[in-house]
Length: 114
Length: 115
Picture 1: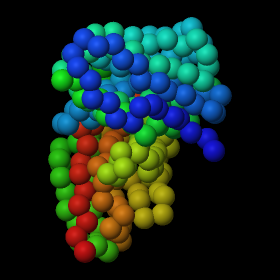
Picture 2: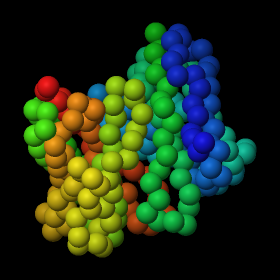
Picture 3: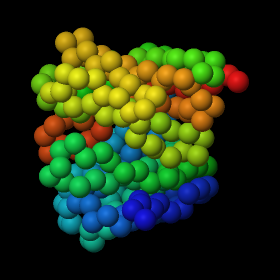
Picture 4: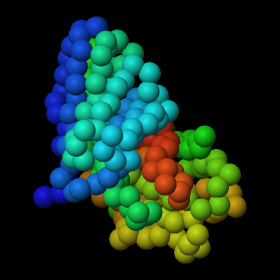
């Protein structure tokens, strides 16, 4: 089954404790992206990657890191989480070259930073 | 930067009736894509319908249809014969046609369906 898998689905942690949210897709998609969803703001892009070793900032990259060492994986790293990073996070992926291709989303990760 | 505005935070509809969700966007591009996504309580993001800006014909998917007004930069979603399973948050999203695959989302509209 074609899917984007995020882990964990829920995480409660404390300020300053490094954490990683994993994202993996099995569709051989080149493009992957992270979004955060906050009430009243919709989803906003954090980082994206057009292919292996190619990443770039989205609209709200501060406090986040990403890496793309393999095509299928695109982890989101919070080196020193703060309470303002409490949010619902989505990973998404898409094929490149087919311009009307919709993005496939993971099921979301609810992060709470205390 | 593109902005997408959904002016209705909440909408309520009687089962079997029709509801229309509004969306406006701001862009200087002439070619782009517009999407409506549904997010039920399970939090999944489910693509409902998409529209390509160069196509004048409004997209339709079963009970879901759009009214795309390019000059007005308006992209409303009509849900006909509403069902209880339609209850969800709905997001309007914009994407340029270029290699920038970023989706710009509106704030969302929560739809409640009354039995």
